[in-house]
Structures are given as C-alpha cells and as structure tokens.
Image (cartoon, rainbow, N blue to C red; front, top):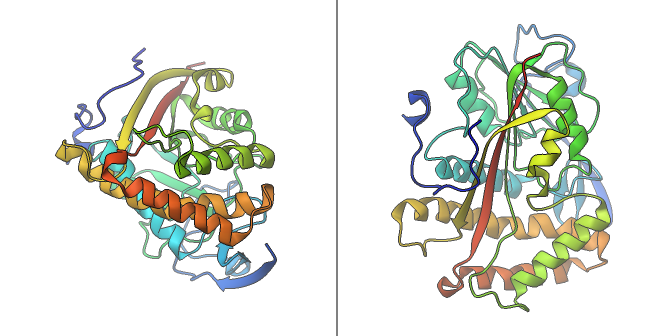
Length: 340
C-alpha cells in the first residue's frame, strides 16, 4: 500500500512517461449531431460518434440569468460555466505537474469511464492518449465539443441513477463534483460494482477557499458559511468530505493513495511553479462564486439574486488582495477494487 496524506503539489512525482511529456423559464437548444457520440450502456459496440435523432434537442432551464441542465443540480451549464470548467481542468493538470491523473492508467486499459465529464476536456485528452481504449464520458448537460476522438463516446446520463453498463471498466474517473450528489456512498458502490477486479477509481476535488488573514467576519467567510448551510439544506455535500477514506472503504475499496495540495489563488506564491496553477485557480474561483452561490442561496436561503451577486463581488475583492494570500485545498484519492 502506498499511502500519504500530503505532498508538495509542484514537485513532480515520477510516473509513466506518457504523462510527463427564481422564476424558471425553459430554453431548448439544438445539440449538434457532430458534437459527440451517444453511448448506450447496454451496448459497448459503436460504429459512429453521431447522436440518435431523439437526442438532438436538450432542454435547459433559465434561472436568474443563468442556464441549468435540470431542476436540482446546483451549478449552471451555460457558456460562462463551460469556460470555468475548462480552466479548472487545466488547473488540475497543473497541480499534477502536467499529468492527467495521479494514478497511472494502465497502458492495457480497454475501458475508461469519466463521470461528470462537463466540457469533456479530460475525457478527450485520455481518449487521445489511449487510442485503443474505449472511453465513455457521462454528464447531465449536453455541452461537449465536436470533433472528438473516435474511441470517445459521450452519454447524457445522471450518475445518481443505477448504472447499467454491461461491461466493467479498468479505470473510473470522478473529478470536480463536490455538491453534485447527496449520497456519495451510492456513487462509490456503483463504481465498485462496475470496475474490473484490480480496477482503479480516482476521485479529485477542490475544497473551500480560505484566506491567510483568517478574519472571522470576512466576506469570504460569510460566503463559505452560506454555501455550506445552503448545501446542507439542499441535502448535498460541499467541500472534501466525500473524499474521506472510510466512505470508499465501506464500498469495498482498498485505498492506494491520498494526496492533499494547497493551491494559491493568484500569483502571490514565490514559487513560479505554484504561480502557474494559482493564476488558473484564481480565475476559476472568481467565476465559480456566482456559479456555486446563485441557485443555492436563492432557493435554500431565500436570498435575492442581487444580494448573491453583491456578496460574490465583495468576496472577489478580498480574494484579489495579495496580502490575503487566498488559497484552496485540493485532494486526490486513489482506490482499488481488490482481486476476487
């Protein structure tokens, strides 16, 4: 067993060389048939990356000038959010020193699953790196790009429902889904069920931002408290609690690695390697304040949209101050399904 609880996120670890080189209105959008491939969990054979005809129209929900994939998920899926997701992807990669995952994906992997793929950046990169593997990427929102590798298949699917894949996976990837699920135990049980023996699950997320100053009544503190309170009322989980070891062990996993990083928000770190990730983390965080707060605060706490935007603006100002030395924790956990 290779376990650790903290490493310097910007000191490279040697892996496979392949890694190192309130009133809601409805809006219908047309999904480009060249955008991605719709995958049927019951059939892993694919001859095309085009959509079936009945999947061309995906409905979005307009709420407080943002667009959402459904009535329950707290984050939007509009253009601003898609930009944030792509920047967040690059931030995760930077934290890992240019790698796509903390754990090596075996070169022999035949099936790889990406849950909550968002804009599909990670799935596309993995499909390009593993052209002989079938990569399946799921999300509730139809926001994936066109021109994907032929071995990549996107699926519009809700991971909260029972997974019905008929073939097991070598590697399952879940990243950036804090706040997505009310019952992570169920998600991990499904992942365990659909992994091959000795298969790998990797889960990663960013936690709650913080300031070095530690001012108790700062706007960042107020925002964080409101987020956690609203999420609890909504029955979901923010932060890094879903990455706790006992939760995965209860699903039958053996923990292989745990890595925790502290990522600066901005370029205040004297370490040039940290400034790269910090610049992207800052942009993603500034964009993410409204994305995380708007639906949660208006629905669960009864805030007016303008009040949410006001607290977000004030928190942004605090984060931008160099003396605040704002940062955000980032954690990865790698779990393995034991051989039968």
